[in-house]
Amino acid sequence: MFLTYFDAMPRRVLALIAVACVAMLAFGLYLQHVVGLEPCPMCIVQRYALVLVAVVAGVTAIAKSRGLLITGSSLMVLLSGFGAFVAARQSFLQWYPPEIASCGRDFYGMIETFPLKRAIPMIFKGSGDCTKIDWTFLSLSIANWSFLCFAAIVVVGLMLMARQLRKH
Image 1 (cartoon, rainbow, N blue to C red):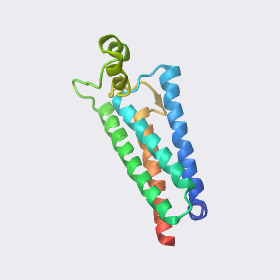
Image 2 (image 1 turned 120 degrees about the vertical axis):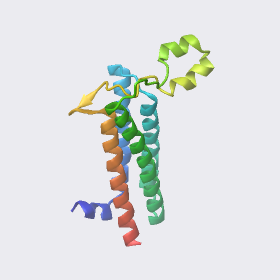
Image 3 (image 1 turned 180 degrees about the vertical axis):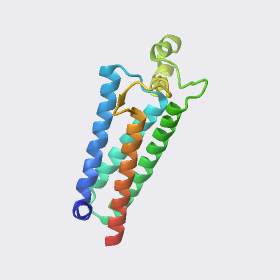
């Protein structure tokens, strides 16, 4: 039954992926602004990947042609694969931290040291430590969960592509 859903409703699957990405981004912003966790540069890159996956999935969900569904799904798989790679690398750094970890300066240090026009781009690079585990759920870190979510999107995207190619 699950596989027939991919045949009958690929646009809904893509819309659900877009909504899930937005929910993950919202949760990341909650952890940052309410809980007080500082995102590291790798976290910021994963956020960019999530934004791109959400946009591609949302635009592809609107598409009516099979060719655009295949193209959008393949782009979504590539972007999710990139996000999974970054999350896997961060997970590896968390499990096997190097002797000296350098992921950037803290927010207040940047504002105090640099003029505003140089500090703003630095803010988007993140300031937390990439090897530090600040939050866990079911003994998995944010990077671990991010990897699992990106990997799930890759699998769903590949299934969508395979189903659309088989129909074509």
